[in-house]
Picture 1 (spheres, rainbow, N blue to C red):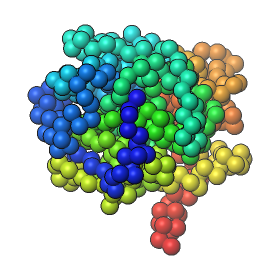
Picture 2 (cartoon, rainbow, N blue to C red):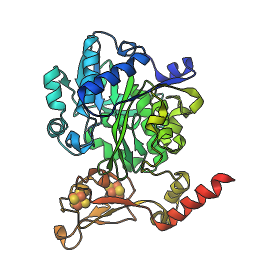
Picture 3 (cartoon, rainbow, N blue to C red):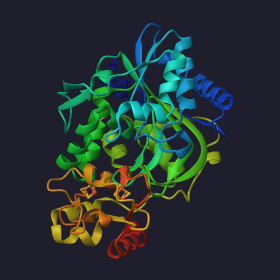
Amino acid sequence: MNKVSRQESKERNTSSKVVLVRCDSYDLTEIRTALRRGMELLGGIEQFVASGEQILLKPNLLSARLPAENVTTHPNLVRVVAELCQEEGIRLSLGDSSSRDSWRLVYTRTGMLLLAEELGIALADFETEVPVSFPKGKQNKRFVLARGVVEVDGIISLPKLKTHHLTRLTAAIKNQFGCIPGILKPEFHVRLPGVEEFSKMLVDLNRCLQPRLFILDAIEAMEGNGPGSGERYPMHLIAISSDPVALDSAVCRLLNLSPDLVRTNFYGEQFGLGWMQAERIELLGDDPKYFLAPKFKIERAPAMPFNLAWRYRLLKNWISAKPVIEASLCIKCGECVEQCPVAPKALRWGKSGKQQPPQYDYQSCIRCYCCQEVCRHRAIRVKIPIIRSILNWFYKNLWMRL
Ligand code: SF4
Ligand code: SF4
């Protein structure tokens, strides 16, 4: 674990640096040039890790998908970060936990196994559970983490920029959710079904883990129906910072998304994890205008009014976005049913069994979107009810102008 707490570092620093560097493709030479240039602007990788330390590289390995599917952090980016660290004499391990697929399948398909073998990187243990107490937690004072996370000196987080229906965005802060071993992750959705509580938990998790550095793969981001079934968005960006709140907030501004609508940013600043306000963030590197993506497909409506829906069960189905299955794309594999964390399941087989796609019980569905996240056949989309669309319009056009 890091020796310097993020809380202390925030007390020392009145601002955070975020580096934006252009990288047009996953070509290794291009990534090497971009990343070295970006790291030099922060004083080099040696500012964050020291020779002889054991450092975990933590990419986003949501599931066993090929790099070309654009769901996971690209192995070439991980490779270049590993090269930089090894030049400094860092001992490396690599890992993430998928809540669905076996680690061997995930590491093989995502290209991480080959990379680890070629560079002599150890695969971290993400299956053994280690309880960790975190008395400074504002919401969570205890986590169960993967052994591979706990037994290192520090973490370099390598997120992928994608949309996410619960948190809107998965980038620097959300990436650490993978440090919780696979099968324990869905439990958090049951315990913390609202986005406010879930976001506070993610911020506490980051305060507990304190990754040293965040290097975001937005060379090709994912828009729309992320994090597993969205569309490719070539953003040509690598973003680097030691402050995950500043990094995610800077990216939100590039996407024309108010940073406080991503609640991990809001609570991240409140809890002292980092800075959300633009005046506290120093942008370095290439001109941000290269990366502006105002039409990036992402939810830009406010979250707060809809959270009220959880207090009024009757309103829930009218105003909260709901997952729906497109029957023509569903192959009836049942992975979504297995993934549903509530008991009894809110997604189950109907009377005709596996002859028909599974059916939702929207009254018991907690809108965690784990089913949508897990469907690799892009058969589950998240639909916004008409009443919510009307409320969005009023909020955007009237309320915001008051
Ligand atoms: S919706 Fe997707 S995960 Fe669920 S049964 Fe159909 S194809 Fe499988
Ligand atoms: S049906 Fe889907 S969104 Fe609803 S609780 Fe189950 S996994 Fe979550």
